[in-house]
Length: 347
Image 1 (tube, rainbow, N blue to C red):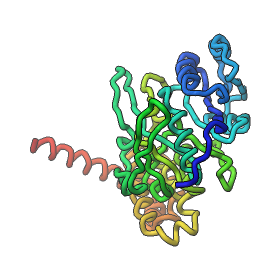
Image 2: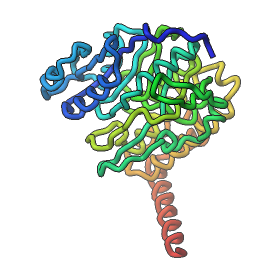
Image 3: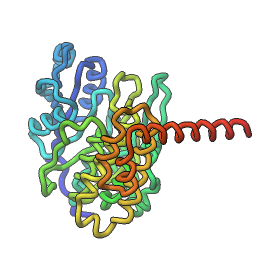
């Protein structure tokens, strides 16, 4: 644990990207304002909305709000624009379809003040579905391989929170290797201190999926992080077009790209964790091959050739003709249906 610093000077810039969702934006903005101090700021980045979002935000009449407008470039570019416009070293992210607890920033501000070597703090969160049903403690329902924070970051510190907020379990440590298993960090739960980062950090523009996994992994590479086991965010399921509504094959491809570009390209990581890396990369490559062969893909050879450098078996498959690959895919699909029929017959 580092030396305690006064958190009175730890003003926070909240970065809130939005596109064509004024009703959801207002809900998110109100939750951010309720969690902020007078010295904090809310930077709303309009990513080229065709709808008028400024009017509803303007009616809030809060001087802590700053609007940044840009042509439509995607959520990564919008977050980057918000970070460039932010005037404070501490930055919190909030998506326009998510909502914060009122205590979110005070708890994280206090933890970052207490753990002065930490580069970031993130939390657990709850999720609502389209019927409004709530699932709490959702961070481990994403399906990560390791689901014990004592194994991930070590035993917790039982931290006394600011007045009236009680206590919480805070886990502090090196989280980088854990990010190999999957993304544990919801962007809307994340608070970073860019003044503590050794290298500038941005979201990768042009990536349609898992850009936040890549960002949070690059963040964790730069220093220890704090995880607080409290639901400080609600991720709402009532918004159309959520980033989590994804197609299967492109999702697998993007996961492979994160593994290769971040963990595979890190010599220090490879020297210590190469076997573990190859194991998890192999799992994703296997999923990709099954999806490519089983799906109605006319570009099977192109897709397989892209990942051939990472697998000898995929390299061999990529040399087969399109006809052979199609027949192999048909066989795999037939076997899958047969196994499903056998299982249902014995129920």
